[in-house]
Image 1 (cartoon, rainbow, N blue to C red):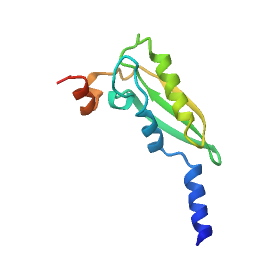
Image 2: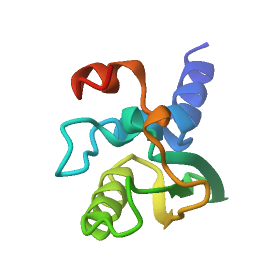
Image 3: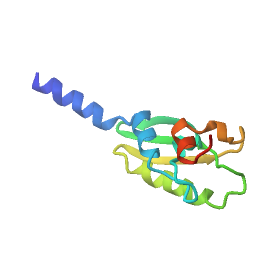
Image 4: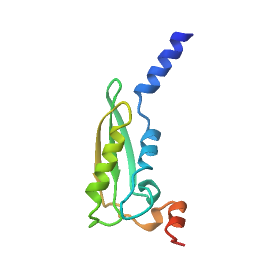
Length: 118
């Protein structure tokens, strides 16, 4: 039984989950807005591909609150840096898109409350 437990633990450590990525992204902020990028609705998708055993590549598609946002490169770099710190992540690709265009309706209720948008 102890061998089975070690095998299960090893599998859990070597596998990166989408939930881990989403949780880390909740710590990323647009420096101009006091709400994380998840609650702002800026992250459209997270995809994980395990290229080699225990080594996962993470692909993130996100947007910005405006196409001309000067903070875009800084936000993308922060996303990449934080996700790369997850054990088992070998590479992170962050793609910024503007289709669909971001709209305040994409924000969570908590974000709207924080920003007094009611």
